[in-house]
Length: 524
Image 1 (tube, rainbow, N blue to C red):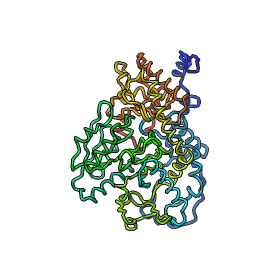
Image 2: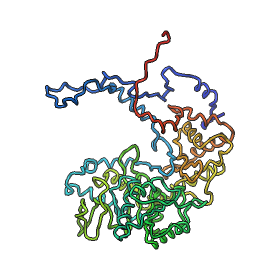
Image 3: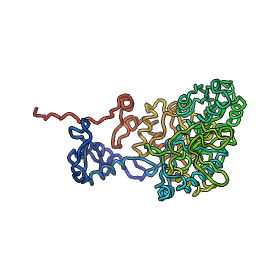
Image 4: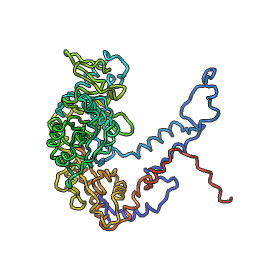
């Protein structure tokens, strides 16, 4: 057997499997224990002077014993976190195939601009008169977002996708209440293939949810929507392109049906990166849509860090945009902080967050837009769709497509029909990808597809990286069909940790480190 460099691997790999090292390390793949396991209470990498004499005011709350926190020397601290960082997988490591949520490449240019002192040092409590440049950045970002979506208003303050969903739906709720229909329009329609946050958001703010069935081809039929419409329906929450990676062909007709019934059309914009520069949601009849800046305009996201999920609003919903927002009048801009200060014709539904948003995310997104221009952003969307269809075409003869009649948009979706009879599951296949140096794709989502495997390469991958990824998955697929079960059911073999019991980890999580009991000596 040869690896992709053309040299034999079996003998070497077999030896590597049986050879155990004293440290547990495998060359540069180093085991890194918990800091509680390697640290010592008496060790610290910091010298702290003894404080001057003082009288404690803690009283009965004063600590009576040691805290028990572990400490490391300065070099050990550095090594600990560097070694942990080497176990991360991200866009800087390799192709990141997670479907539906995949972030773009976070260009270093964007990072450099966001770290300029005028942006990185701005404070939310300083007077607005001292930050005209920050307001200009927000206005310019808003202008780009409104131009790209064909919408007349945008709320910048929401922090991410689900927060943006809440903003859009709260604007819809405020508009309904303003028409005196708050007590009657209480139902939100949500397609079966939607992100789970959609029904959760609707329920959170007081709506009841009715599911819209998906057609056999993975799309929503206008006839199915019309069958559910009535005076009790407030809105529909539809993702387009949808979570199956398909552009909804009847979106214009669905929007028209909603409007004719007096309801609103909320579009989940998580997948806007597939159509930027190609289609404007406002032209399709959308009333509100959140935009994930991390997915469409390259800002970082994840790990609990700062996010941004601006929401564009139609003319019907623009008056209800939340505070704070920037109002321009007579060529001058001002930050409207309170509902009472809103200009005439504006009726904000309230405030969603303490401050306007995360300036670093705004700067990064605007830097991406300015550096790409209209033609560059359009090409990015085209390349994202091209890459997804290239992967689809490269695997379609070995892996089954649940919706073969529609071309993919930003992501290619496969199911587990092709794995029947192999003894290999979608999860096994995903774990085997770790051994090949890839983060697994999104698995078992969307729920309307059995054993789903959702792959989104984004636009930033070269043909060479896509070819290697496709060849790797083809090799895995052939092995799965060739009854090489141990390659899958015991995977990953080469990761720092072997496969965990994920069900037990979810149901019985261990959230606190406990010092293990001392091991008795053999002589005892």
